[in-house]
Length: 630
Image (cartoon, rainbow, N blue to C red; front, side):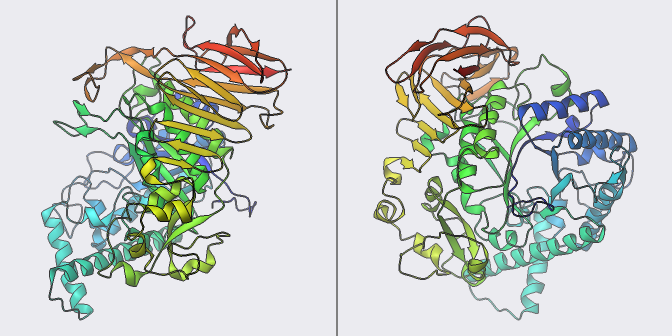
């Protein structure tokens, strides 16, 4: 886990958002407002992303020199976030466009070829180092410190989404370079291969070793600059072999998206294809499919997650991500993204577009619930872990596969899961650790092969009597999910959540909700640090959906987006009857979107407590209610 240098033994978690492209380059007043907005949402972290190409000095022969005026704006934004106690992470290379002849060993390099070239070309690594040194060693005039020495920059990745297993072969000329290096690697090791399958395994080993060697060189360079930030890399993909790379990192990072757009005609241009389905119908595939990629013994973050607009069920996002991240004992969550453009931040009357949450109240309100579950720690970390044990020997054997076993990630709905090198088993501090195959059998490096043999009886009899993937239900002590009816429940001492689809009734320990229809998120949470049973001040959330005016879809299922639409935003009407099973008198106030009381709600007594009816549009949008108990 993360911990502060002067508070050893105390776990630290981060929940934040991303700022991308021109949104990183604001006037001073707008930078101050942005940092203040992050703090008010409840974020304690920000990822400065896609900043590099817009930071470089134009009309130069290289892309490594920094534009002083742009750097000044970025420095002030850094300063503003730091002043609000918001910790910063970034990636040294994201989308900096290479100039012609900039990489001497590969003059035709262009675009973002650096991701593939850094592992195999010294000149590419030198290019990365020059830019990194220029960024990290310049003094920020507003903080009085260099980025390298500033603890506010607590972490960064070397290159964004640079997974070598896919990057090496994207361009034929770069692939030819790799094949040349691969041949030399085999000759050096005196490896003679006689079949294609074995050659593929050796290629994977070569790619893995090459990435590790590159990371170690760059890490040594960064440390030589006097930078003590935590360092990461390989922050994309769910490939088993990546465990050998990720075990070398200071922390592990990955990215996870639900309903990522399908590009029908051009990349990142509408029309888009979307699922427009609830993630609950797929047993929380996001974040479930990402869970195996953590390395036990290393902090784990997801610096990009989103359930993308215009998905009508995205109110589930912060709730489900926050709940399961807490259960897994992860260390950081970052929505992607707050904004990609400075106009998105400075224009208050702006519509929802793509990945951005700046003008999406559903994303922001869902994050507030996620912050309570994850950052405040309302969901307990699972007591038991079920690690995927591996060794380098096994991962490059004929029995290994690139993908994680199909059934393994289902265990993450009730227990901690992830990878661990067999040589590290005794060093991770796991206090309760299930064996992967038999209660009486020692850990085996061949656990991946054994998982392939699991049948449904293994889940129901050994792992958890209440969980069998075939029936779509998983229950831990605090989280319950039912894919059959798309329902989700959180029950903790300070927060309870119900996600209900359709016109039906559902209940948790302290709530009974009669939903009038559609998908809705209901959350009751304590606001005075006391458990709900004794709380005098509570907050109640009711989230449905928000869409742009004049948004246009290509079909009735709303799975083909043809036009984003425009401002003003439209709230999906939602009504419900709420019963709160608490003793004492309750007063309920509907709150405006800026948190001001606008309407007192009539409350009546019930046999078990109190009940009241809510309507999320009594003349203006309402997504939250203040509850005071006397």
